[in-house]
Length: 84
Image (cartoon, rainbow, N blue to C red; front, side, top):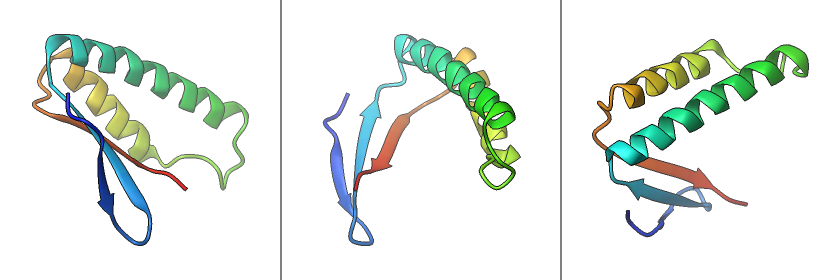
């Protein structure tokens, strides 16, 4: 695992965490992405207005990632995010 890296973009810093694509990491990501999908789908159906609903391609991408981590076919993992 690498230490978070900071990249400067449009005035905001992007943090990134790189993880090894080990069996353990992929299993954890598989479980986490399944939970994330379920939570987002439930919120989308119950609480979101039409303007707040996530596009279908978000769910498609999460499903693809879920399957890839189940098959342990992911070769690298990088999580990036921006903070205010």
